Image 1 (tube, each protein chain N blue to C red):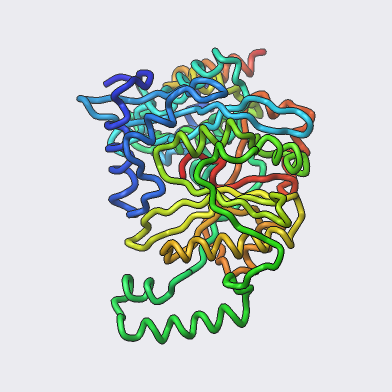
Image 2: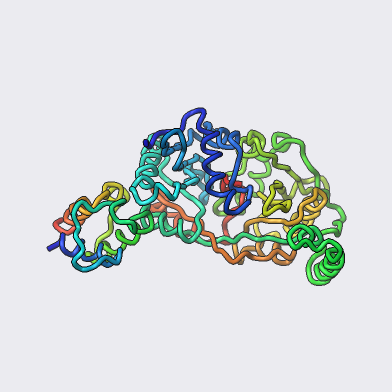
Length: 77
Length: 357
């Protein structure tokens, strides 16, 4: 459920098709995922879940999978 | 390809990288320094050792980030902060997650020196990155200001209108004399003296007298000036404004080439906070010095609505459209003084407080 919502945010932020395949997604695998794209993605996820990441957490986020894990860490607290 | 700490010998590669980033696009020398500038900037200074990370690929530097320790006055306290800057990555290497990793590594390194508060200057794009990824907060905006000094030269060099340029210059001078303070005017009882070295003036005493009139400022003591300007391989010129033998203000000037014109920078300045009368004299005499030394254009930074900005505007400086921001991050955000720091009127902040000039 959380994972699906994170994927939806990512698709919306990077303007991907709704049925886009999201395997091994990380900066570099999607052209839009550069520094500014990262800012928009983090902001989008924070808005969607009503959470706020720390700098250390942001530093750990280097793929869609680690983003999902970080969100789960917040939501399940 | 690797992200690694700066090492001796990198300065040449960094200079080449920064010139690739800036000079070919803007022809603005302010951001395209020679290798000896980087060797100076990244050497230990009186407040600590800069943390610098580079991304190297195939013998070339393709990414750079630095944190340089400085002392910042905040209310009655002085704290060591890191000026974060030189955050660049070659466009061909963007979108691989390298930029963030490089910055995170430099932060880890600087925190080993117990430096946990940071500031930087940012354009709109950099502001998003600093606030969005590094949780910095914006303090306030500042503006870059320019003023023509020799319109005839600007017209000659840029518009290639040699014979007509004298006519333009005459109209320009008339216009400026009529509508703005005339920088040629002399002030009775005042002296504007050029010093040979920053070590020849007791900035400690000046700071003790005037520094406290500002709530926040980079601490401007003699040690700072010697490191920032005398040790710096680029040429900076110190002028002291004296009234009846007592120093009431100073100005630091520098010359670069921008778009084939000689650009004179009013890099750093200070008078007692709110003393517009002294500031007017300082600006007038600084403009005269820049003009006497062949500058076609004068450039400086100022904070809108502050008395210094109002004086600059009175002397015919134009505010450039692009906004810049002063942002801060780390433990300083938790300081009880943080809310007061957001008041731009209580700051002394000049172009020289960013090391990029």
